[in-house]
Amino acid sequence: MKLKIAFFCVDCSTKLRYRLLTDIPDIDLWSSFEKGDKTAFAELFRRHYSLLYLYGCKLSVHTTVVEDCIQELFAELWQNKPASTIQSVKAYLLTALKYKIYRIYRSRAAQSFEEVNDHIHFEISHDNFIIAREEDNQKTNRMIAALQQLPSRQREIIYLKIYQNLGYDEISEIMGINYQVSRNLFSQSIKSLRKILQHQ
Image (cartoon, rainbow, N blue to C red; front, top):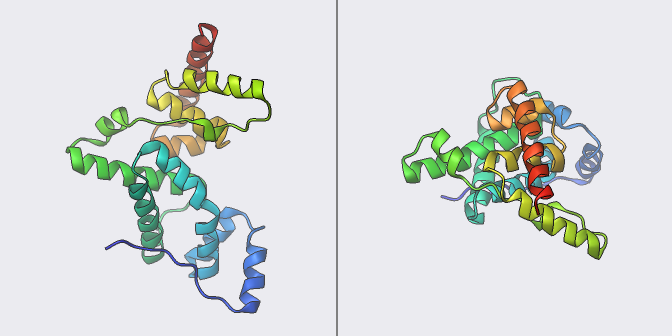
């Protein structure tokens, strides 16, 4: 049965409180959600849905799979709040979604996580760039073409670091690697990207 998340009904006083929640940091919202605050939970869903959807669509071409995984993730969060301490809400949600999508592919192909991780095609496309002028459009096309020549994990770390502005500690959590490996991988990825661009 498909799980659906619905925003909770609120009265006028709660609506005012909801508007104020938009200024509260993620980690404080998370703390309120852990105490059973439905409005904080709804704000977390609203705040992170687009990010999760865009990231999920780079891991899977099946948008319905991505949507279902996000819905399932939040339904499970509400029913079973994490016991461990969360340092970064964004990193936690992206990691949880990634593993949900990977589990679907793994179950279909009877592959290990590492095998799925190596074969999944991380996509960076035009929606990651803001185009201001026609010459920028040409530069963007060059960049996308160069990025597509990189291995999937190099594309992923560039996306997380540059386009999502995540720290290495958050990237380490999402990608399942340690802090120093994430720094080395990003450095290697940028060097590879520059080399490709120089030969275009």
